[in-house]
Length: 184
Image 1: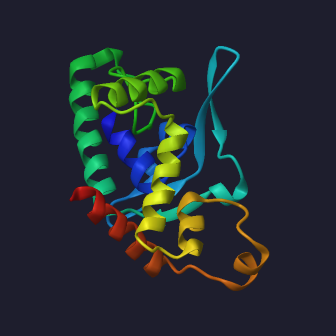
Image 2 (image 1 turned 180 degrees about the vertical axis):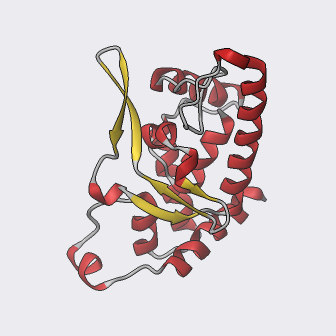
């Protein structure tokens, strides 16, 4: 699941968003991804739902670190599909179990916690990973409007919402800047 963690840290994904990401949401040629669905556990069932808000539905440029993580995940999934043979379920999801089924958000939490423990970090939540993305962007002097777009927040302030605009070109540059800093 480490490839999913890259999207949490480098693009500020929410847990349900990263688990609900589908291969059809990725455009490797344009280096963009679209966030539309999330996976949620509701009364013992895993459900595909629309993202949190209309503002959360977004097409964003992918930094190099995320493109590499998604390519590694595709390779992992192809290998799992061969091993699973007839037991494989093609859900179209990017992050799946070894049999192609959706990852339970609780298992994602456990895996994240385990990874933090092995790295010698104090326990942080996946949502703290999203906050870390925002903090890193601030530290890199990324304009607040771009941070708002990357994290897909609905509110910032009236003046920023009405007057400021974030272009795809500058958002791409902001995500590239973050990617380069994480690769160091």
